[in-house]
Image (cartoon, rainbow over all chains, first blue to last red; front, side, top):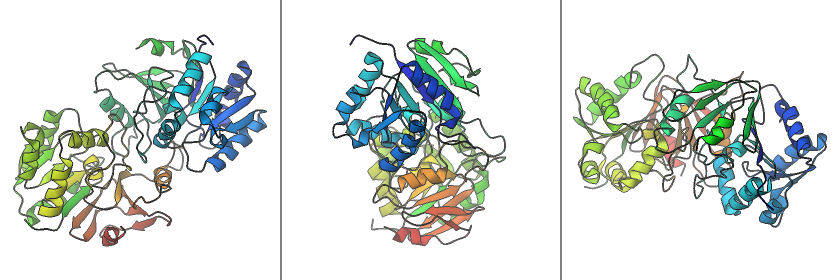
Length: 242
Length: 242
């Protein structure tokens, strides 16, 4: 047992325009899995409605790369599957649906323990990235089901807004993403939010965070002006904000 | 007392690009208020953080048009204020914050009763439109606070997606709005969703719905292909779907 360092790869998106599923992050994902000598992946498909179809799609990609995939929904004992997992891949879809299923199956504490105490690697994409943070308060998804709480896995101490989008200069489209995050930051005691643009990902290893991908991220901290950080930046300061 | 017909004006947005607050709907709002001989408006500012600032903004617009505005947050007894209201204006902002406040102040039943049983006119914009429907399940807002339920006022039997946006052909931006609504419709028993584009509004009078504004709406019904309906259309069939 003993506390091992966390190992996370958090993607904004599983698909980038004009590219196949996970292909834009193929190198980063493969380097991550190789680094930790992973051979098997436990897939969590709860964010989408059709678990079998989703599992087939994900399996075909990871198998091409040489990894074996089991989906948690085919396990009779999901808690046991989590305890035996070599690595997690939590896919995107609807964040509310995903979080509700994690609660329904009593998986919040087991996954947290695996990642934070056992060092089991965790890859999340979109909704899977949202649930890795302290809460799902900065998801873009529609609240199509009611989870028992917005509190999520808390594998890191700050929020992420996946698919972060800059304001369009020509159309209104309701509040901008930045305005929505500002509304969140009017609530006392909430953490910083990383606006993770489409092709960005965060690699978190213990207390070190590196920004991967091609775009900048926009970081919102309560009471401060937003800051842009370039691809390749060290963002470890985010782990010291709380 | 006795059951009077409902009178609702539901706006997609309070601001359209290049226009001042509520100006794009000024004629429709004024016609609505005149038709029902309204002189006083009870404003509900809960969707934004700064109630005073929000009230000032709204008051200045309605006063210019000749109406008196009271904000519910200045009342010592909000339930009583609802009971005495001549008309409601529920403004936009964050839908979760708005719904939570309506529950916190025990206003769900009193507002529902005023509108559905007493025929008190209700104007909603964006978040104020979302809470008029059976649930907030099709809001675009971030879940920045946790309401005790997603069930809303239920003044009409279908959902609305305000600020409805067509898919961008060039950027991915996560799931499209249509995909998000399709995810919602995989849940058994949920109602149709009206995708209300930026400058659209619905005028509901008893069992009649008229689409006002300049754009088409896109209507999503479970198990059917989405349908476009032009400005001016009679959408009363939506009241017979449940």
